[in-house]
Length: 199
Image (cartoon, rainbow, N blue to C red; front, side, top):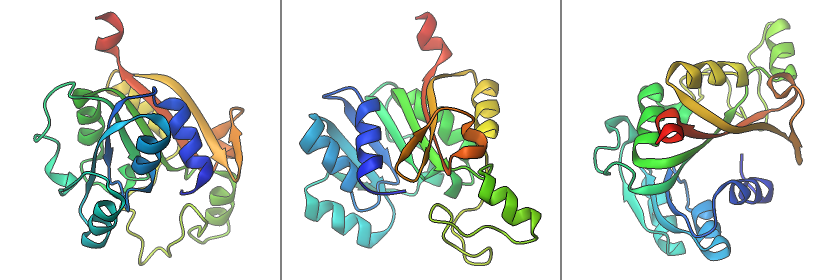
């Protein structure tokens, strides 16, 4: 998921002037937008050489790091917000990285392709894995090592005592609040830890 709707949606969830860590930041476009239009500062984390070079060209501070190694480089609560924009589904250590997100920041914003979307269900019912704008690869060449649904993520957050502050879906150019597990191609979650709620 890329483009104007994503940037605007994330900017509305990120408090103005936040210190941001963007995990799997790609070419740095989102972090650059948050810095230039939303008063934010921070770092991107990326492993791909070409994307790292693109971040540098944009003036985005970037750390080249394999996220499978975790976030030991960062101290507890060293950021206001950690972004994982279409990153979680690529990771073997997805649950660990989710917990790490709320260790290094007060808030996490997670987006991922929602496999529960009606079109994906229909594709599987017809005997084929779906190929969509959010899941643009064939089953044999996809970088996604796992698929999940809006409801799956809600259960994972509950298991790890993470508070879902706000959750909705994106479908095309629309925000979906009603029945996003079936009606939204992309899931969006804003999280805080339960321990922070009682602090």
